[in-house]
Every structure is written in structure tokens, then in C-alpha cells.
Image (cartoon, rainbow, N blue to C red; front, top):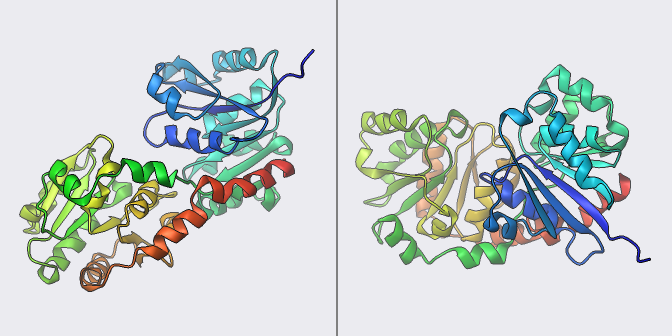
Length: 364
């Protein structure tokens, strides 16, 4: 009788937004190994595109409603036990708290819990729960900033049980998707000769596009003639941010593009990319901008600082005057993108983190 294939269960809440690529990132770490990866999405309808993008040997869509992943999640626990039955699963990778909770109760396997946000263990109930399983649990954070917050909330844990594994991209695949500067500007209906500052993200207080607009407005008189601020994204602050652009007298120089499908394809349209968030756990858009060869400006808090520091420009969060100074300086400077591209390949790719990941697995 042949030996069963060793398998890894990857459990994801869903595949919306960046989480499809998060599943791909972890499945890709097993390429060329003996392990087969089964990726399970708790929410989200079956999709051939998602299946292909998951880079997994098997993809299962449970298609739960939001109600079914609240409370005790008994149905999900039963279904995961059914998936595990009869196959040689060695460990589980679970993204975000609910999948971690389900995997810990559904099996006795070692679990790697991946956290993509701040504040997960601010709740006492979650701390009490997670402490019951720390002997077979390794927690990974997408940045040192998230890791350090988790360590603060879980002081009884050994530091090596709460570690950082940066997000990453397939550089060649992302660059192959990105269209030329001229094509990108045509698609976004931007003038070819303008100096363009780009921002991509939800129109939400966490992203702090208000400081971005204020900083751009202050910098504008010293920027090249016809300079534009272009914001991709939608959200509840859209009317408020548009009103701010009117109030500051820069409405003609600020373009709100709304939700742009596959927006990273058009990053070469930008002469600078600004991330102004107050609590960015990581900032995948920074990697996509680096892949496009776009100079970076980022607020100095959260995980974004770890991506940009040494290869881009940082400004104190919420400081519109400091942001204006960085934009003015960048507009006059000769573009230096090679250090950022080198850092991207050395730190934020699957190849760069693979040995670190397997070191964590041996410890688990």
C-alpha cells in the first residue's frame, strides 16, 4: 500500500480583497516539496478564477453565510473535521482569528495562525481562548508592528512563538500585469505630461486621505505645473474628502477614480505613491508600487514604515506640512528606484521568506 501524501490544510475566512493573494503566498511556500496544500475558504462562492489564483493542489469553497461564521461556529468545525478525515494532514495554516478558532477546535494538529491586522487580542475572551492552545500554536504577524502588539497582549508566550513573516508578492507576475506609463494614463484618463501623485485604498479614516489632500494642497504651488493627486478607491468618506478638496481650492487637481478593477496594473501612471495611513498593518500596495518602479512616500507608523524605511520617504503621521515638504523634494529629485526594487526582491518575495518559514515549522 502506498504511503498517503502529506498534506497541509490552509483555512481562510474568504478571498475578498488581498486575502486571495495571502492564500497564494502561503501555498507557494510548499512548491517543490512533498506536501500537498488543501485551501479551504469559509465564505465566498465557488470560483474558477479564485481556484487558479490560490496556487493550491485542492481548493474547497464552503460558501458559508456571515451568520454561519459567528458564535460557536459548530457547522464549520464539523465540516473541517470531515475534510481532515482519512487524509494525512501534518499541520494547519489559518488566516485571521475565526479560522484559527475553528482549526484549533476541529483538530489536534499544530496550527500556524497568521494575523493581518492590529487589535486581534485586545479582547480578554480571545486571550483566554488562545492561551489554552499555545503549546501547538505559532502566531505569525505580517509586520513587526503587528507582532509587537501581539506580544504585548500575550506576555506569557515565548517570543519565538509570536514572529513576523512579511507579506510578499510574485514580482515577475505583478510586473507582467502592469502596463506602460502611457497606456496606464490613457486608461485612467490622465494627461501624459502631468506630475502625478497616486494613492490606492479605501476612503476610510484609517487611510487618512484627508492628510494626503492637505499635504498635496500645501505642496501644489511648488510642484510642477499641472500636477495631480489621483486617489483610487471607494468608501464612506468620499463626499467628505471631495468637499475638503473644494474647501482647499484644489478640486481641479484632485481626481477621485473610485474602485478601479485590477488597479495595480496602472501603477506606472504615478510619479510618486503616497500611503498616508495611521495604522497600516503592512501595506501590500507599497510592494506593488515598488514593482512598478514608483518612488514611495509613507507615514511613519504601522507596518508601512518597515517596507519603506531606507528606500523611500517617511513623514510623521497626520503631519500635512511634513508630507508637503517630502512631495516638493521628491518632485525636484532624480528618481532612485533601484534600491527599492532590490529590497523588494531580497525581503518581500516567496523566495526571500521560504527558509524563515520552514525554520518556524521545525520549531512548531
